[in-house]
Amino acid sequence: MDAEQEDDNWMPLESNPQVMNEQAIKLGINLELAQFHDLLGFEDWAFEMIPQPIYGVLFNFPLKENTKQFVEQEAAQIQEKGQHVSPNLFYMKQFAMNACGTIAIVHVALNADNAIIQEGSYLADFKKKAQGKTPQEIGQALKQAKEVKQVHKEAVQQGESACCDDVDRHFIAFVLKDGDIYELDGCKQFPINHGKSTPETFLADVSKVIQKFFERDPNEVSFSTVVLAKAVQE
Image 1 (cartoon, helix red, strand yellow):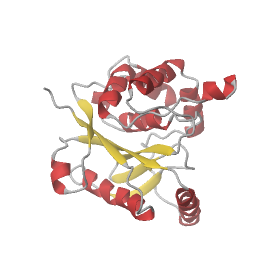
Image 2: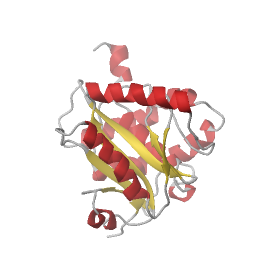
Image 3: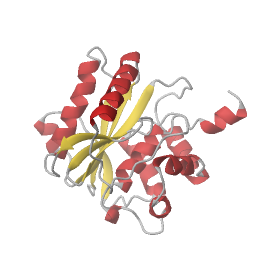
């Protein structure tokens, strides 16, 4: 890997709520109001373990050939039929290799209640500067943000998994905005509208979308789901 490639490779983030919470503090999420929690299953008992309100969901999954084929088919179908996208949705493209974990965190945080973002923090400033910019411009701005890359690097070093360059996993985010569930993936052409939901049913409704990932790859078990939701004070 040459110097330019190394600079563009942020290295993979681990799907670990404890590490993500440390990262969230540095980016500007108020952990007294919101924290990342592991979703341990897709049944009612698991949903009930996550405190309300829920601000968003991060999903980590393996990238395979059938995944790429589905993405192409999905994009073609949306381009043909169209879809509604809320003008209030925050969405950015991904340009740095392996930055998907941090981008998913930013997607969830900046589509959530403004109250969970600390005033004067990086995220608060980034959201202001992103207003009126395209997803491409926002993505390039994040790629060039040395502060965010350093926070990402520190989170990678905190992780328990061995780090490698040949990464075949990916993070995406799910948020509820103006009554619709959106899948936010900086590597896709656009956000994906997955239909109506409510704050009360959001987690269960997102889980139905995630189940479709399982169905497309029934022999795979290495999926993980983390939820940004109300903080639990110990």
